[in-house]
Every structure is written in structure tokens, then in C-alpha cells.
Length: 149
Image 1 (spheres, rainbow, N blue to C red):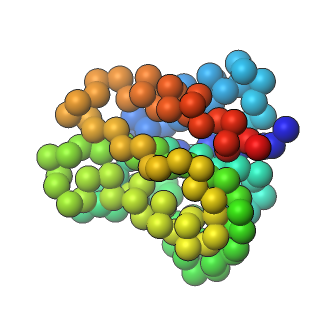
Image 2: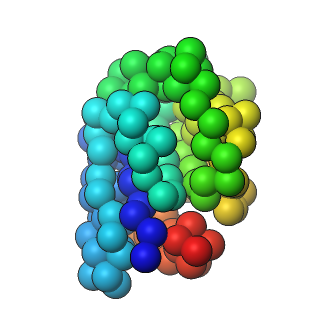
């Protein structure tokens, strides 16, 4: 079975909590997965599949704990040819154009690097959702077979 890397991008810990819940849920189902909160490019290239769970900061920016990895991925441009990935973006729609900006940036970058998006990016709006972990866990359960095939 494929190894899934869960990459968590967080500012205040909410996305980290969501990622931990996803990891726990998948592990209970026997999925080989690991959670990275301070990833390197190797975490992206070495994984069989990628799940990005990220909040957004500032004006649609990538959280500080993912800035270096995101920048290095852009600079090094390692081809992720056909690597399955999915992105869950946590945001607040009151921020308008920057809503889920970090997730959108990751979706775009991983697509540019020839990764295979197995699902449309999930946008979780803090205005509508008090427990984002429930929405993300449910979504991951519906796409996990595509991620791990």
C-alpha cells in the first residue's frame, strides 16, 4: 500500500488539529501515513501520495511553517509526475479574494509540478464550519482510495 504524507500548514494550530484528526482516522483504517508540520522538499518527493491541509495567513499567504518548503519547491521544481495529491484549505470567506489562498497556491504549484490532483480542492469556511476536522475527515474518507491507488 502507498505511503501518504499529510502536510499541515498552520498559524494558530487549527489546521494542525485537523491534520492530526485525519491522520488518526486513516491510521485506524490501516493506512500508512505520517504527518509533517515542518516539511522539506524530500517529504514531497519521497511520499507516494500527498495530502495538504493548510490554513491561510495575511493576504492569502502560506503559513510560516510551510513557507520554506513552498519556496524550495518553487525554486527546485522537482517533478511530481503523476503523484496523487489533494488539498484541503481552511479559511475565512470574509477575507474575500484571499480566502483559502494558501490552499490555492499549493493546488497550483503541485499541478505545475505534474502532480495528479485526485479531487477538487476542499474549501472549509470558518464562518460556516465550527468543527472543520469533521468536514475534512469525511472528505478524505471519500477520496482516500484515489489517493492511495
